[in-house]
Length: 229
Image (cartoon, rainbow, N blue to C red; front, side):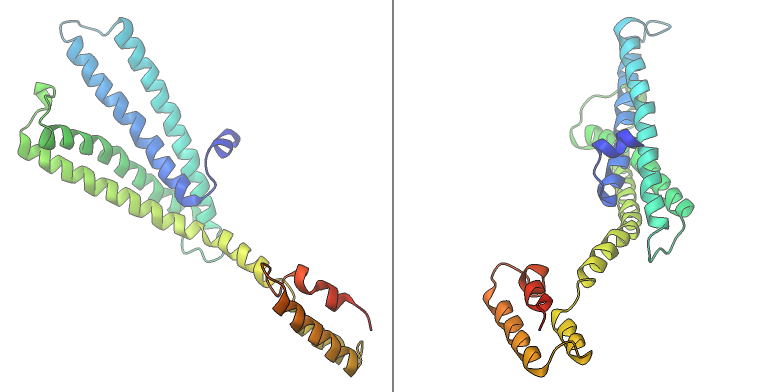
């Protein structure tokens, strides 16, 4: 998983889309290359030479990309199942991403075939040509499959995102309120009334004067609060 993490984005949504691409695009390239190879070698009993070597390389690439897609889906589903407000477990999330991958595997070649036959009217292998009407149907099948794959991956990714968002909001809210800290010190008897009012005026003045910094940030208020009486 290390090499995948090193070269892929950390965002769950981006990882899900990348997994869909790894699952479908190499498979589509291999499928169409296989059809071209069969067309070229239709008078031979077997494929040989450059055609066979190309298909072998594409097939190995297809297997490797499928493995990468599985790793990406596993990671996103694990994060979705362990998020703070998770509504699904890891296995269910992985099954949904796997179904999205199947949708992409069906959708990409169907979309390409539909574009070639229905829109561009490019010649395809005679045994695969079923008319423009069928091409339009296959095109819509590809669009629907890709839409399903995208929406499913997006939904699972949104379940994985709250963990990062919760951590960020926790960091933002964990900073102490300077005014509350000042009041607490005054109530504990650490500051006299005069010192309390002086430091409160300093705190308000500092917050008004500092530009480009959060008034509640450490840089703006840490020094007035930390001063002793």
